[in-house]
Image 1: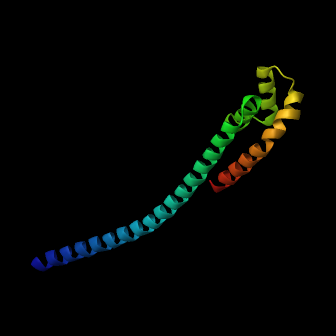
Image 2 (image 1 turned 90 degrees about the horizontal axis):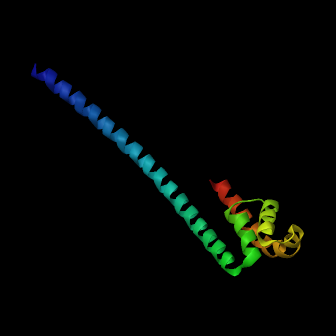
Length: 124
């Protein structure tokens, strides 16, 4: 009778040891995954912080109609035509005036943020 208990305890202990080894292996694999995920998230955070800083600096440089256009296009994510129509109504100017004199001033900045946004979306 004692020998049966010893064999049973031996088998249970051996099974428990195998379970622990399996858990350790899984934890190591998950740990590597989490380290990689953390690196990717930290890189993305760094990129987004620099993008926000650049946007804030651009907004500080702009004033009036240029600021409103940039804000509507970048922050509110309106397409350029809708943004120009909306701003032209609020400032009581013809849309063609905004297209001709104001949009060309902010277009390079908008294109820069649009290309950065596409790169960030492709990362995600």
